Length: 506
Image (cartoon, rainbow, N blue to C red; front, side):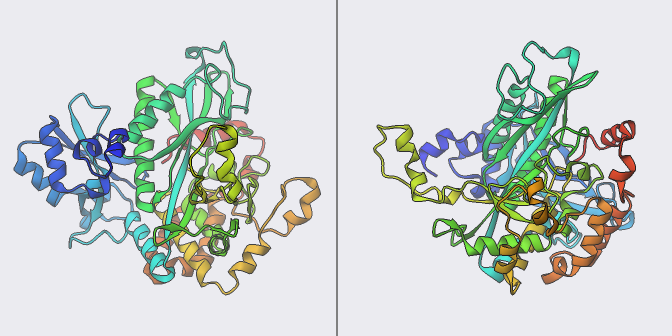
């Protein structure tokens, strides 16, 4: 790694070891711990509720530390996952060295490290979401030659007692997008989170205040977003998990609530988990062709759209997910795609496609004298339906399945052409175009029915097992939310109780 990169990298281990996290070894971790006064080690791993769990160790000596980093530890899987039986519940958790970071919240110097699950025979746990995601990514690459990268836009609400917030400079209701102090109240919390996440290895693109803000009789609500750079599927999920945990830790320190719930109340902006994706071949992007969206990207988009209804089974997993997916609120309800179009399920944002886009810097800065560079490597397409209730590993697996499916379709480019929109489909003058498009599921129940119809695609190449598909269907059907929006219409108190029951989802 270049010295300049190390100097600017916020990760303390990267700086100290003078190498990228992907190259960390056991010996590196031991060296850092010994030479930086680290006293404790914490294993972290995802539970069935989508939250990071913790197993803490006091480091006794180097032999003890070496043993932990080599053999991991055992945990009770039946207490972590509902589908694992008590009579065969022991699992191993093994640390992933590249994920190590100094815990910024502990008074005792502590190193945290994310772990993967293994079964009694020492194999990656077949039912673990992470294992499924890795199989999906491998199948995509083996069948197409492409590598999928992704990144998430993590939206969340800060909820504070109104009496504790200085309202001298109030934000305009539902007009909080990119607002700044003093009209936002919690950007300092967001900035602290961004620094901690970066120090833990997260590649953050930017953070900002989001659209949603409002008050009620008791509380002040402010929506924020932290967006990441594209990375491997595994890194994408690992960093989102750490980010959620860190935001909650900071909220606890500030005496406020952080909620990733997809809907806080009716009529106000909900929190999604927009996921941007791009395909690489031999390490180079294949998203752009002749100054526009490439046929490769269109093929991938077609595959995702073809199984989009089934993807919601992994990306929208609670009843309030579908209170967010309503027309006119930049949350998609129809299966289509478009350029820069926020009413579409998949959006291709501005992508530095043209040669002229590289010259913008010289217009803004007349003294600019460097050679112009292409920035088309930044181009992505964005799946806009998912929300923070998602099983993150399985959501990324579903994306890999959908993209691979696109390359196996005989008519992918025809499908992409048919489902392309270049208008706001929710305007009255475009109602005929809207009528031609299929709807996303409107409840967890409908999502389960879609997954039943598409299960064979998800199970191809042994990516998703039939047991996992059936468990997902049973879980979604068990939420009993068929036609829930109609049942709750006008019943604000019942809606509030439902929202509160999922306020700490994921």
